[in-house]
View 1 (cartoon, rainbow, N blue to C red):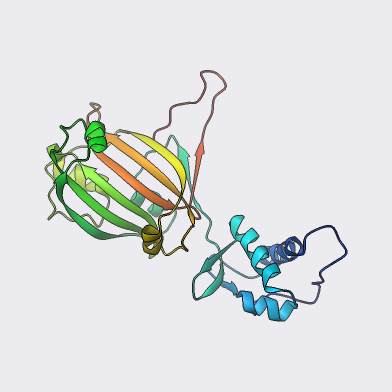
View 2 (view 1 turned 90 degrees about the horizontal axis):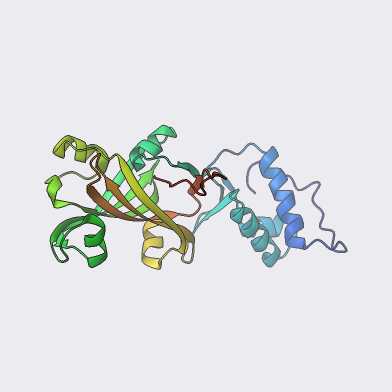
Length: 258
């Protein structure tokens, strides 16, 4: 049984109108709040809960799913259920790179470059970068990590005027690389976000179960003159990211950059 889980006070009230899985979820929530666990610690498995608390597998599964939906627990396939790490909360407008955001949270950012090369620019990307359709553009596909855990699957299209090449090192911050190699700084960005179900091939990269929720964002970054520098598409783990926006009554929604 996971460390610190007490079974002494647990009794299902089968006569109550509250569903059994909800009763179990409430009990486990109390255990998590009162227990000794830290984010990332092993909590338990479905089999252990079923055996120790004498409840059905269906009740256990629904209770754990509820706690996972609340962001308290996370399941790692083949290993069990763990105490969830708090999501990365990003306030919009707030423009920083992935590396800067992760470092500011006291975590270690790292990158795996999956592939990179010069390709004909897709029509939609050409429009964002103000390029002629079919022109050559540098495409870099990366997997971004926080404390050695994959968080973001990312594809960047980098404007050729920056002079970056496939031989350049893209394991660090792209913003820093652009400043160092091309002497340009990202000043603003248009950032669009929508909820998705993570595609199976990307889910494998991000080490999450098929069908997991995620966030898809499209970002076009600009220099101080308003010229586009890079267009980016990224899929973020839904259990690792939370975005907030400041709304104003007067003038409607403040335009958000980030």
